[in-house]
Image (cartoon, rainbow over all chains, first blue to last red; front, side):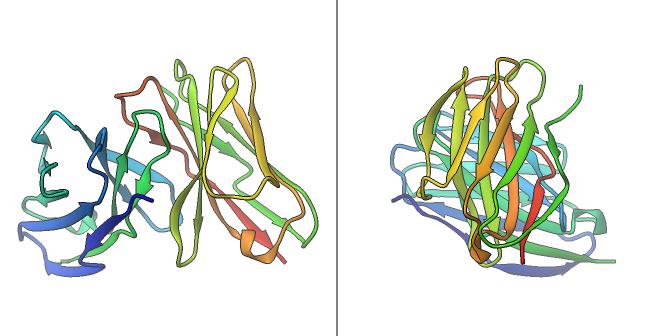
Length: 112
Length: 112
């Protein structure tokens, strides 16, 4: 059974700081990895998807990296804002068509 | 472009009853996934439908079932409801294997 672990479970930082969220996975045959944000009581918003053949993806202030050899991915958020407060989830797809395996998420609070 | 839509938003049932949850994927997406997000357990993959067929299921009992219609919308049926079935049920759709999954806002199922 594949596992995804996210560290830290919770993080609180002042507005304007750059921060890194970590994700590790056990699946050596990872197909792709996706980062999501979830606001309280809501569904998931897709942020970035990295294919197994890629090293990183960028969207605005967000940058996600993937290191298959170490089984790790990071989500870098630049110049954090209070609107970035949410739970961030990473999920890996093992077979291209399987359901995603999710981590438990990092609950992020950006203090104004 | 309309996103993934789920209905109802909330559903309250009692133990032993049956529940039906519905999902409409993004136009053009043929794959539909169902996930359960129970308190303390994180997001877990339930079922995957593609082109009207069940392609894969997670580690859930047979009383969790569903179907996909010719228009690619989907239903999730949960029979003989138990208290531990209380959760947020999320539906996601995807166009093809290397594309991201996009999620709806979910159906909150409460078992009394």
